[in-house]
Amino acid sequence: RKRNIRNVKAIFTDDMLTVMADDLNVEMNLRRALDLDEFELYYQPQIDCQSGKVIGFESLIRWNHPERGLVSPVEFINLAESTGLIIPIGEWVITQAFQQLEKWNVNKQVEFTLSVNISPRHFLDVRLYDFLKQSLETYQVNPKNLNIEITENVAMEGLTQVQYRMSKLHELGITVSIDDFGTGFSAFQYLQHFPVQGIKIDRQFIRDIAENEKSMGITKTIIDLGKMMKLNIISEGVETVEQWEILKKLGCPQLQGYYFSKPMPLKEIENWLNQYQH
Ligand code: C2E
Ligand code: CA
Ligand code: CA
Ligand code: CA
Image: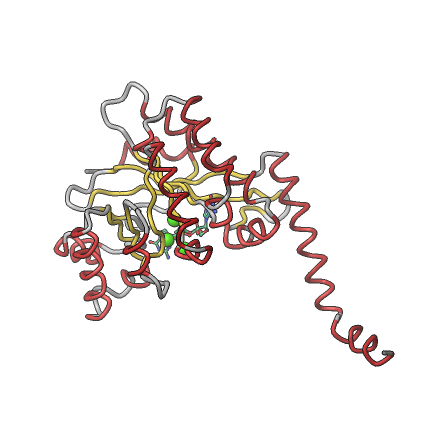
């Protein structure tokens, strides 16, 4: 028995205690960040591949940390998900998105779409449907202009659960897209079983599409398949005009990437739209 206790002690190294303390700290800080309004949405344009025109934006969260400056979502979204804080954070994101979409689209001839990232845990939570329904009643927003992006991980929770959640969102008129398409092993099963309206081709295939015939072949296949299934298709991570040209030839409907613009804070968007030539 004594030996066991000694072993347990040995397992908790100083490093691990530091890691756990850090996690607790981050959780407290995330909570505080919500209260103090330290999160900010950046927006990256989504482009019509044939014409080059802006069709909408994807919102991407940032954390304006008082000491660390701008913190990337890859540093805190997973932790927010594991603590459950992802629900209030996701609701904050949705509210911002609705407010922005209303500003962009009310009394305008050209309507923008807005894509919002929702974590698997939030996607599977009953509160998501209610919150979206409520938001649709509060803001003058056409639900077809709101798109929810989810990653393939969501499928780990089981087919019927995910299908049910998706069908509830369809009732509201909101579309759902699969993010990072092609990176999970279940990509085809996903299309077979889930009623999604769009896919985003992961940038790992786009990155070397001009040099690597395999990447080009995979991308072409995904585009053809997506079109056959009447899905919206966006290629992510377009960084060069060559990539754009190839994707145009392959018939990809929509593009997103640094070639057009990095994600921008709201205050830069109007200027960017004014100087963007297309
Ligand atoms: P994602 O949804 O796949 O978003 C695309 C990421 O690629 C973004 O990173 C974007 O800035 C970056 N990106 C866009 N174009 C290019 C390009 O041409 N080249 C390269 N190298 N990168 C490009 P970001 O903003 O750091 O976001 C990282 C991830 O964090 C997102 O991946 C998404 O999974 C998650 N995330 C971001 N915002 C939210 C949010 O509001 N809620 C949730 N749950 N997750 C979010
Ligand atoms: Ca996304
Ligand atoms: Ca993605
Ligand atoms: Ca991603």
